[in-house]
Length: 310
Image (cartoon, helix red, strand yellow):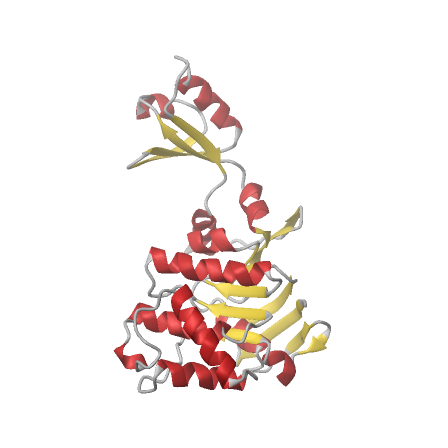
């Protein structure tokens, strides 16, 4: 079960919504698709589902074009939620389940189990309009997964959820991944993307600007971020060549440096007395990388260990 997107482009008039996109996602793999609003994420999902026609390239599932049979094995959660407000949860979910080939009796049993697993507040006989936003989001999630799909397309799956409920849904996505499902999802919260994604594709104006393993992408920027808890003064730190910025936070300070070697000098200085409360040198966060790349108008292409920087 492999999704392959090859040299895909889509134009709306003179505007390029997706520009020469390439992507391969295999079984048990989670691909995070990120970018600013209008970068091409939702258009990519619509191209995969054939809601819109591609202009160039090809999209295949197990080497074949995606047809009706393949679509029945897809679980799609759209950004624009599509629940019928005056229908009951039960009728809504059973309707969607039947569209994917499930028997109503089987779907009803699964629905009860999903209600318990996701801790939905309410009854399956409740109308959608009576549910809170978070519980309605959980019901939409159930509609996406109840037929046990092989391929998940999730557009902003955690919108409107608190951290506890986000964790519940994230764990269910991981369960599908561990069972061998192919997963592609978009999200604006970079910490969620970082926790869930094995691989990452970042789009800007339809173009791919970053692609590769999430961990490798972060490491490719160097360990230029230091989390420090120490009594040393800002002035002493700023006297070290290569210290670019110091930010204070509730746990201490974050120090941004020009290169990894600067960290050795900082560590030596703060451990002069043999003890430091906290020191951790890491690559930039995905959020910091995202901000850097989407604000960077220079176009450059280089390849480093399978990671594309454009």
